Structure formats: C-alpha cells, structure tokens
Image (cartoon, rainbow over all chains, first blue to last red; front, side):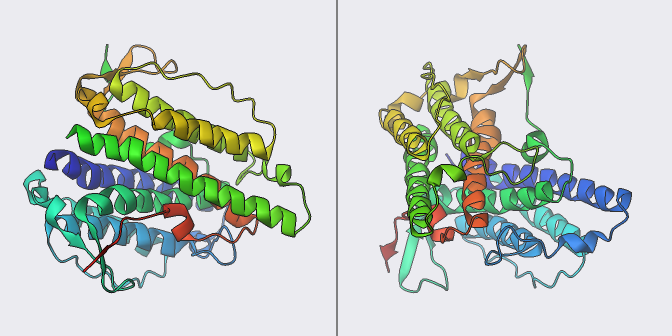
Length: 172
Length: 172
C-alpha cells in the first residue's frame, strides 16, 4: 500500500508541479508577447478576500513538502515565503520538486501510524490515512487549480491537458 | 491496497460532494438574502473560453461516477447533462452521491488490472493505477475547486473548511 501512497504524494505531486511550472512558463511568454511585466500576475485574486497568486503557489508547495514529510515521519524544511518576483515563484516550484524527489516508496511504510497535527488546531490530530485522503490530496489540488484558474482568467492560453501534465498512456 | 482506493474515490468523493452541496446551499441562501435568482449562478465562468458553473459540476459528477465504475470494472450510468436550474444541479450532486454510496471496498480488488480508455483517445489506455493517481483524483478536485472558486468570485461566504468538509479529527 505504501507504494500507492508514494505515487500519490511524491511521483504525482512532482508531475503536477512540473505541469504547473509549464503553465507558469506559458504565462511568462504571454506577458512578454503582450508587453507587460510578468510580476503583474503575482497579486491576482479570484475574490478580494482570497489569497493571491503567489500565496496559492506557496501553499501548494507547503502542502506538498508537508505531506511527504508528515507521512514519512520527517521534519519538513521551512521555506521562507519571501518570493517577490515571478522568477522567484518559479524557483519555489523547482525547490519543492527537488525536495519531493528525495523520497522513496519505503519512506511511507508507516504512513498509517503517523499522527498528523497542525499548529492551528492544538490538541487534535488526523491519522496518516485520513490526512492523506481528506486533506493532503484535496488541498494540494485546490491550490494548483486556483493558480491555473487565475492564469486562465488572465487570458493565458492553457487547457486541461496543461493542468494534468503527462499521463502514462499505453497502446492497445 | 484496494481499501485505500475505496476511501480515495468512494468515501472521499462522497465527502467532497457533500461539502460541495453545502457550498451550493450557502450560495442559494446568498441569492435569497440578496434578492436574486440562484439560477443566475449557472452561467458563471472564470474565463470566456472555460466551461461554466453547471458544466463544472456535471464534469465533477461524471469524473466521480466514472472513477468508481471504471476501477471496479462496471459500466457507469449515463446522466443526461440536462440540468437547467440550480435545484436540478443540487439534485445532480445528490444522484452522484447515491451512486457512489453503492460501492464497497471489495469492488476495487482488481483496480490495477483495469485498462481505462476514453472515447476521445482511441487506441490508448491508462492502467487503473495511472488513471487513479494522474487523472481521476486531480481532475475531480479541479472541477470541485473551480466550482468553489466561481462561488467565491460571486461573493458567497465560504472558506477552505467548506471546501474540505468534515475531517476525522481525533483527540490527543
């Protein structure tokens, strides 16, 4: 079972973040073609009381590194959330992918025995299973989708295939 | 391993769709409080060339019933995509939850042996594993998140907790 967990949160998060990075690079090309500064993307929001573009990517990154760390019993590295430019946001995605790439399937052998707690909910925890199924996956895709939606709203030419990234199609 | 698959696409899809339904009911209340017809939500889009609100929910529904059907080797029921009112959209969510509720963990014992193909990509298939990890989960959350984002953009007072729904918090 831990091999499936590995694929869900390491292999696939890497795939999704690689797809997100390709969307970000298309956004940068879009800005260049339309002669505006790509840093103008960073403050976009879908609603005045939602987190903006940069924060969506920072949370996707935190969710990704938090999931592999928590479910393998490791401490996640702290990233400073100090990205101020579009290129720094791209570098945040790369740094997250690099961290995820260090994990192996065996790291998740005890995922079910991890007690997952959060500083914002003292005295409570989720089982490793419940955290994976009900939080880590939905929350990660929430923030990658919201980033994608912000880019679509800004007119960047991306589609569902760009969101999903490479799929392992076979012949037959 | 098939119990985890069951929880990922049956238990959790039901949880996510139940959370989505609660968001839709808050949206209906918001329309009533602000004296507009909730059917006005149905055509909302985040970009002119994206699918609108109703279609986002129809695709989330199709993804959910498609995933449990395909990964258990069953034929998915066809839903007609004929929802024209907000209440009919709510009923579509209920109908999807009802279908998902019929599945049991043992139905997914052979999920890895299923060859998943689509009418829009003839001659190609995904393994059950690759479909689950790289398509069924990201695509489902893409459409539930986009529905949520449309409601946020319309001023409906919902937050991340409404999106995630009930989590199985334990004391300790």
